[in-house]
Length: 306
Image (tube, rainbow, N blue to C red; front, top):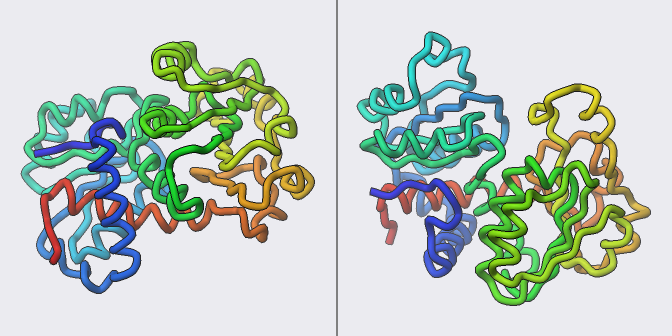
């Protein structure tokens, strides 16, 4: 039995197989429409989510399976003090696979240690968001045709952004990857990510504050929102929330084949005027999230479709 706690739980070869499967699902959805008949997915979401929870549920429904679960800790026995380990022991009696989001880092890891079914980490605090990373990798591969030899700009909340941390972990395993880290001083990439991941693997990167300075050299721009829920006080959030706004003028500085990704939801960091730009890939990215989660469910349940 396998779980997905981190993008590193799959080798590069296994990632390629998973992305190939997701692309086949996109092309031949009818072939997979009954692959999970009789199977149940439990979605245990201890903090709010739209895309991640609904895309997991859509993925299982598209495969012919069923879904159950809760969308906030308040609507579960966690509000009565039930532990994650006890909850997952119970859920293991009801479902075949589980997707969990939790505000505490490491909570899905605790769950998988007490589970008799596969666990998908659907985001834990500011730590990891591996299914978003799989979505990001599929999107980059589809729009650029490759996952190597690229300059990736990561913009916004690089301190608390779990999507950014997961994506860095995944991309450093491909050759020719270079990062431009675009953030204000207060939201810089944490030291442990720079030292233990980028420096340790000799990955070239530079840190800049101005988005305009980075635009001309990027192959991919990965925008993130400043996350209100990660701040300790309202004052700091209000000061930082509109630090970056991508608009048509800034897009004019970019290459014709530079694509914009965003894990969503966006607030003000991408102007709606950018939505019509053919290089805006973030809504396609949301669609790819369903295909990649379908592929992940099949992989973890060890279901093969001829």
